[in-house]
Length: 207
Image 1: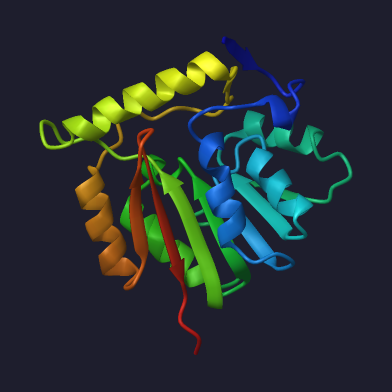
Image 2: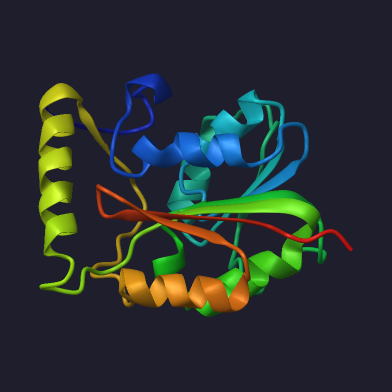
């Protein structure tokens, strides 16, 4: 139906491949707890989490994105940090939930998951939606399904273009990402989704 961009577009009128999977993350992490949004961009997911009662901190390296996020939360109800998630001095085990959308492929994925594991409290939940690379020809059916699904949604929705930097292609394949997750987060649930995304959920074992 078209393309839109800019913070003047209400959250409820926005759609793209990342926003499509926000619900998976919102439903995965606890309400009422402290939640970290890694690679928060202009803050749409952080706002959804806050609306469900979470105490949200968003972190992103992109300063213009963080500025847009702060403009959309003028009351300061969400804490936004412009910085490197891998090195910012968060206290270990200080979050009940950690979420991330389309961010792990911007960094070393293993280092990112280890850092999330370190910051998550025992009993807390980590939920990621990420992008990986098709390995052709094995992944051709998934690629075709992605094209079909994306085309359908483009015909029925107006695509919102996010302001954050883009990294393409992702450095690891879906199979490699699943192996990384299994190695670092034993018992994690890894699922592949139609529109070039995977989801990863893991609950840190209680002490």
